[in-house]
Amino acid sequence: MEKFIPVVVIKELSETDKILTALKNNGINCAEITFRTACAAEAIAYAVKHYPDMEIGAGTVINAAQCRAALEAGATFIVSPGLSVAVAEVCREAGVPYYPGCVTPTEIMQALDLGITTVKFFPANIYGGLAALKALSAPFPQVKFIPTGGVDRSNIDEFLAFDKIAAIGGSFFVKESLAKMEEKQ
Image (tube, rainbow, N blue to C red; front, side, top):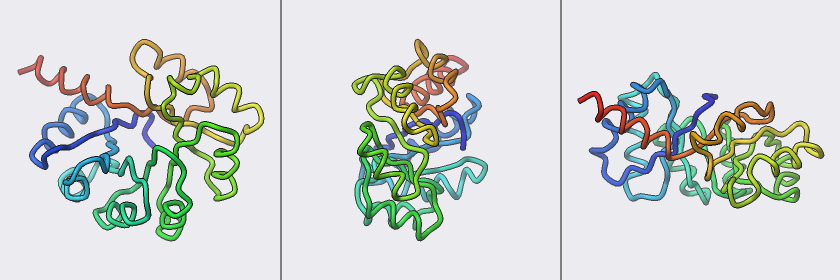
């Protein structure tokens, strides 16, 4: 897994090349393409075909039907804002990593019951940030976290310094990468 997981919202398929090229030029070879838009599955399929050296996953997957569509499009990992048992089962059957959003001890215990040890912590800034992750790590030492939401350049180093951080998720990676690409033009 990459240390940085850009949350990518593609409103029109034509945006895919610009965004993924900007990420690659910025040294990021991963993208979580969200299922918030009508062209999400199409964008994932396009990205998998045209950017084979990038890890392309699906984000904001909230049910089994979306999960199946993402996997059919070629997604190599699935991310949800919360925990869905149905999505977890589809991912387990397909042998694809699933990173559900978990912010409470109960949700983390449910993820562990499903065999999941890496969870998304979203929205990190609302649910206590790094202090909350450190507190949750005490009873769950086997769990790794992907904080997303409220993580940015001002605090990313603090998060990355904590050994229970599997990766950092965020849309700010896309904004930064696009800005750098425009500066060079």
